[in-house]
Length: 613
Image 1 (cartoon, rainbow, N blue to C red):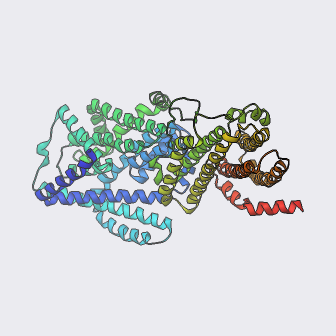
Image 2: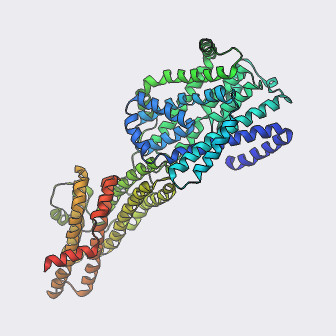
Image 3: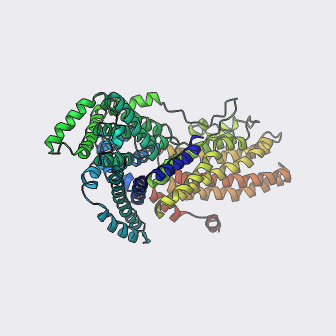
């Protein structure tokens, strides 16, 4: 309801303010251009991810000081602590980062965002930067029209910088003209009351624009035009730092518990920094004046002094929290404990839960590295759930499959019984929601991926389809298994036990390779396994003929056995296909190797035909 009302209220307020003053139109237009420049800059940097960020993260965040440095550098380059925060939450949710690393990056991002204040105060207001904006816009558009993704990325970056410069220029012009008609300093409030009021103004402005840079731009420009006094400007800067956490909070809404922990860390860090600065405002202002004199910043250059203040109070927050990152991370885990993942527990008498994807954070969609990592983990989770569902369908526990006991003996002592839940019911509760989330996630994320990354995403999605197809086949098998597995005819029961055994053997083989992490070995064996599956399928026709000839079973039951044998063949094939990619965890070389050595059914039959001659 609030979201629906917010847009019309903002539009009405803007229209009224435009009617009051044309200068406000110039300021608002400058702000719009500035924010559009930020969006373009973000698009440009996203183009250059393509595996690079993941590689950097592996080496640049293994120590707290490295994580901190990465946060400072990334925010300095991208000029958006909000973007870095959402990116970090995305990486943390998908498992690319640990919580301590994420906290280090967030702390560094807060210090990195101070470079924006220095650029605006030191360059944007001292130089006519609109002259630099023009060539950047021209060359940016030229690069944007190229077919190469990297050239387009360069174009977005140039356009972003050009629009940011142009936005600063128009805001500066608007405030200069605005000063001639209205003096906003008449609304200045001093003392503790002023600190609280203007801190809230900074929070609200940043929440609305979702950019602390935009708030700082407005306040620094207003300060240079004497439209706000120095003390009130400092309070707004503190509020902007607190308000910028809204983007992280929004980004964590669809994240798992790891992402929520990092968003909470971001809020606590910025809130703590803001409160401590407000409590020690006189001391921080004294230090600002001290360093300003040392840096030879003139006493009336309030814009540069505001940039220095912004840096010092963020540095104060860094000094307060960075040494305690490990302790802080442990405390966050206590406050937001990991919820036990919903396992396929079919022993409960209560209603089954509907399970959805755990790692597919919507914020990850736009960041290819994070999206691929999330898909890998979700695919592995889907495989584990599929494993449990198929064990349930053939009425053998996963514990038995993972044991070293003889499968034939296990099946002999585990007769087929009527089960509480149908396989279709179990599938709809434990697998269908996850699979639909994966399909939607791949569709949404592929437009942000390179061709190679898109191929990885498709390979993972196809592997998941194999797993779902295996479950759909076992649904059909389970119906006859319950009917004929309890038959008074011993020969019929034994044949269905043999079908169960064939599926169980494939499950055990896959599990053994999972435990050994022998993905390459399993990949090399997979075609031989499929060959054996094909061999058993062909040989079963002879088994049925002999049973019919000996009148052990009637032809009607034999036709059911023939169909169910076909289901077993498909189940085993789909399991092997899905396991190969799930075990590779998305490793590109394994997917490529799989495509190179894979044999289709006609090729397998040709091999078997040749071996029988």
